[in-house]
Image (cartoon, rainbow, N blue to C red; front, top):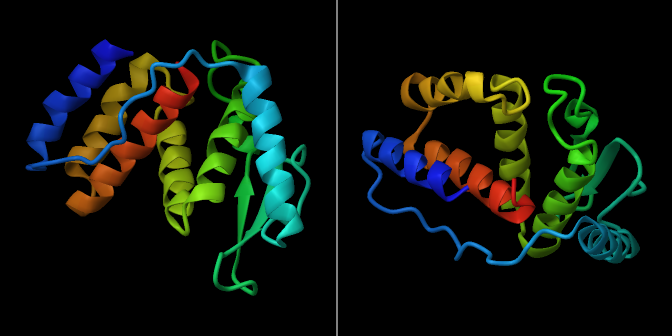
Length: 167
C-alpha cells in the first residue's frame, strides 16, 4: 500500500494541491470479524436513533441526514458484489465497504455521503479497482470537470478506504 500512496502523491502535485489533510494512516491490521461486529454495533446505535431505516444485511441502506430526518440518502451496495467487475477482489468486499462507511456515518455529519459517492464512482471507473484501469481514474481526476476540492475528496476517500481495509 505504501508504494501506491507515493504514486498518488506524485499525481497530487499535478493538481496544484498544496496540502491534503488525511488522518494518520492506521498501523493496525484489518480484522474482518472485529470490523463487522463493530460496524453492526454502530449501525444498531444509528438505527435506534432513527438514522438508519434499513437492516445491516440489506444491499440498500436508507440513511437520514443528521439534522434533517426528512432528508434521506440511499446507499446501494449491490455495485460492490465482487464478481460484478473484478473477481479478484475479496469475497467479503461489499461487507468491508459497509464496515468502512458505517464508521463514517457514525462520526461525520455529511462527509460520509461524499465519500460513498466518490468511492463508488472510482470503483465504477476502475471496473472494481483493476490495476489496468487506474489510468482511467487518474485521467478523470486530471481532466474531468472537477474542482480541486473534489479531486482532494476523491483521493482522501480512496486513501481512507484502502488504509481501513489494508487492501
